[in-house]
Image (cartoon, rainbow, N blue to C red; front, side, top):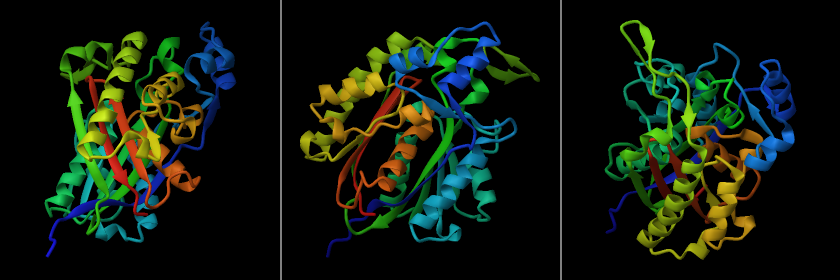
Length: 329
């Protein structure tokens, strides 16, 4: 008798703040600070056309719980069925308690484990891999995995090189115990020697902000690292699952920059119709970008039951990783 336990994606959900800021809107706002940019400049360099920005006072847990409710409903479950919550975020509501605990409270449930994972833009891939281990070990039956960010809180709006790149949002999946394989393979990596190329190095100590509280990035270094490690990771995770790369139906990389996405697809010899792109409408939402793109792909009919989906994250730390899953819902 086969007693092997697997984890499968049972439902997805997403939430974006209602305020949409186009490149033209942003350019007009930055002009009041004597910072020059334009829609053409942003699109040419990033592929971004708009982003969603949260209003002041809206927190990461606010966005996360809306995406969570959608994912739970999509899975045909109730909040009380959830026995594990893992939230990936770099913009938590507080130092503590965790954003996951706040989401649990807002869902009106208690008792199951709830904790945050911090791996910046790789966060969702890290969180999904962690939840997969819990489910496979029999420690969870229905895990809620969320990537949520309010990156607008940590942007320097006087720095054109970063403030045009990011947006706010949340995406969620329910990962449930299954008799059939869902998550086929996962690999996570980090290189802490590369911390300075992408960081927000401030902190709160003794009642005041110490260090630089804003996101800083060496764009060229990040680009070079990203395309190298994502290609390597994609090939490694497919090899682990004994699946040829050309069998992948949809590639969902972290949505940072359309040039990175297109370059990666070419290096992997994957056609454009196998690449999911949402950076044009969402911008870079860090840990939220992959689950937002997955939910969009399912809603648009680009990710269907039985298909193989390769999800990838890469971000500050420097962190990266991949999850290969066969969709069952």
